[in-house]
Amino acid sequence: MMKRLVKSKFLNEKPTQSIAAAAFIISLAGIASRILGLFRDRILAGQFGAGDTLDAYYAAFRIPDLIYNLMIVGALSAAFIPIFTEYIADKKEEDAWRFSSGMLSLQIFFMGTVSLILIAVAPWMMKIITPGFSGEKMDLTVQLTRIMFLSPLLLGISGIYGGILVSFKKFLIYSLAPIFYNVGIIIGVVFFVKFWGPVGLAWGVVLGALFHMLLQYPSVKFSGFSFKPLFFDALKNTGVRKAFKLMIPRTMTVAVTQINFTIITIFASTLAAGSLAVFNFANNIQSAPIGLFGISFSIAVFPALSAYAAKKEKMEFIKAFSRTFRQILFFVIPLSVFIFVLRAQTVRVLLGSGKFDWDDTILTFQTLGLLVASLFAQAVLPLLTRAFYALQDTKTPFYIALLSEVVNIVLVIALIGHFGVLGLAIAFSFASILNMALLLIFLKRNLPDIDGKIILGSTAKIVAASVIGGAVAQVAKYVVGSRGELDTFVAVFTQLVVAGLAGAMAFAIASYYFKIKEFFQFTESVTKKLFKAKKVIQEDTGEVTGI
Image 1 (tube, rainbow, N blue to C red):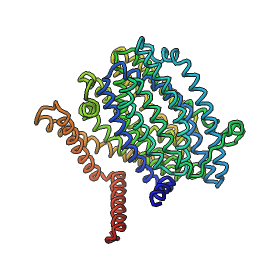
Image 2 (image 1 turned 90 degrees about the vertical axis):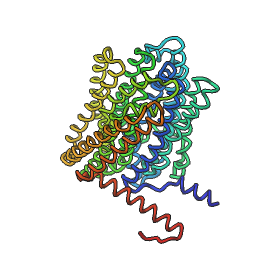
Image 3 (image 1 turned 60 degrees about the vertical axis):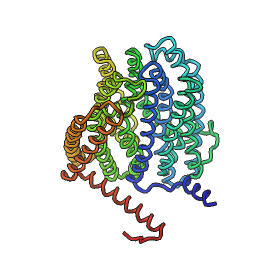
């Protein structure tokens, strides 16, 4: 009976009360998910190396990912969450559930239809996406792609579930879903490959998508959701029609972003074997801080931004945006400096095993170094775009993303002949910084003020503290490296950890000295959580309850 009660309370999660608490939950789950993701990449690298199999695997992700992002991510970010949140805020729960059933009905129909069509045309489609592949490599890519087309349907359903949970500010189950997605992929790598060969990689992705969906359903059900197929009625629903109007520009914005990765896939397929795998490995490493801080904080603040925008409370909107923007930069800027300084050690520790040799390592950490140059910009892009969506402006981010992608393509064409995969990284970073700068400029036009002076002041201090931390990490790296050979995992890991911790301590001291507001907010938040946890433990054990 007690187990059932605990399980019921866990699934019937209470709404998270603050943006910081929500971001903490998402970040904590994100850390676990990213660790699993890096563990997944290490297994892949060690088992297959940067070669044809992983090139085919990552290329096979491209179109299923594109379809999922176009039809689900666009709908959720720009349309579903703001409209569903508005219904809930206006105490129109029945309308909210009809709207969600309508959106889910249309999603299942369209996603299923598109997937079936693309499964049929996969051989011709992949010749366009990977013009440099041929023979067995192309056959494997087509086979993996066809299997992976099952995942967008499952993730699409899960995406609607996630939108409901975010709208109710129930972030815990929502945040755990990506962990189980990675678990499914790892099962594919470790077990399925043994029985089915490389095809097992694709079935692992499908299993992960199934886990992602099944985990969220009970909590959504507890929230009050009951699915009713409403395909024809959905087209008449006011909320659904409004959602489609908002979705079109947002979907086009996502399309531009996805085209960016598709362009990378196309050009990388013409380079030496393993180039696509190298870019993806480097991108996965540098994406960890984006997921942990950029996306988690953006997701956490989005319902609040949408609510402030709906109530025309512009000053509250600006305060929430400014605070979140500065918090993201406080974590991401020093991390980007540390990753750059310790890029070789990071790649060797995370990927350097089995068939992933020294040449693969060198090319990967060189690519990583170029990508982290724009990490600060990539991390704030989710917040900037969501700020526009909360204001129900989905066109501006699209036009800016389109311009940035044009610049990216021009740079890729100009650089790839001289720099190979490194040219892709240079173009990607430049386009990301341009995208961020233009979004900031146009957001400032839409609002009377975005706390520009405060943001600039905090950023300058964070950069200064990060440079100090990076310099200390560099010195510590050489000190540790001078004390012995770095030809074992333990030696390189020790160098990475010691140098990283030294840099982090220097950054913390500099942050204290420079009186960086975000540093004190972070330490105060951690202290409160620790004391709260201690108090709960003391109450549970019957010891002194006051602190």
